[in-house]
Image (cartoon, rainbow, N blue to C red; front, side, top):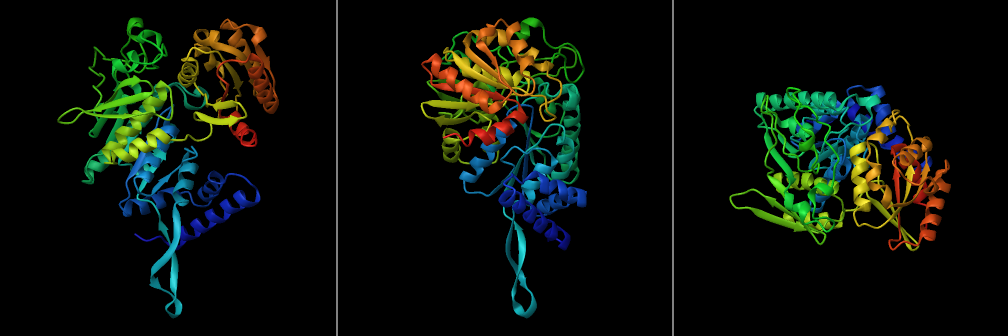
Length: 493
């Protein structure tokens, strides 16, 4: 299938608009040009998706509440390292416009096989990727899935996130599951084989996507030894009390967890509904050890096989991201050497476990946007037992979610004694200050500063005055504050 004149014109327009944004206005230009194209042609994504399908290029979709940017980037970067060309939305633009921009941005000018006037070779556009890896927001997943026809779908987890936009998480999961079921049936009816689902064994709502679906299903998860052998704790119940949002069975709505069942690490749920039979799965690939900074994965074959690496990213939630990525990569036969090299040297995008050295101090930035993700970040930065200096940049912009009540579901009480000083900026700093005070933190340790640039400076000054063993500061912003922070942090020498 060849590109038609309209599609070629759309690619030219996209390139032109992006050039104006990048070179003249000095702005990122992936989303706005795609937005303009969709205003001109409402079927532009569908038409380019058909072209990709006609070329036989496989599509991998990654969705979920937390970890989808990191997971999709690990997958894509590893595939690139193995020698293949990849089309992916590396900057985390995971709505429809961002996905369209990534696709159109992967077309390159090339010589046409034919000739034009007087035998002169004509220029054409060629899709310059062997595989497509797209991070996809949960809200737009059903529509995007039906358009891109992914061969592989992976879900990281589903937790409450921006209730004012998405509603309750069960409703979001139900719509995603309908889309997965529809695409699996279309593959079957078209004799295109079966789609592949890569799902967590430990998270009921994400695991539910595979329930009674005709697909090739692979589950990833953790062995209890992974947490018992951790450098930081020998008590599995002290490692994490972050609870699943699947209080009831996602299939029949029967109560599935007792309070005793839920008082375990959130990566080790052994769930089963006694009413309908919906249950968890033994992982096909599981993390078995976490000793001296080295993670060991075990995967099922005729004989158990093992893969060990020293991850570039720390934290249990990043271990889950590695697991999801590894399961996908093994499924598409990417070699172990490329996986090990990338896993041990992976660098995150700004805001996802991002680090920058400034003088004697290391600035660490982690995006926080919901209770589960916030708890995971707090656990990671306090698990060494050392006290930390933190800047919370907390706002309620449209991309953050207008409802800020979710911070009351974050267990600050558990971590307050590890915080030496906290500076709070953003549009809603006093909401966060009140939450921390209610958690029992000394108000004298809390500073509110609306100006983000000044807030970073104050945090640095407090960290230097505290003279802790770890020369680090941690900045935890919501999404809109992350965008503001990026311009400032990149300019610090």
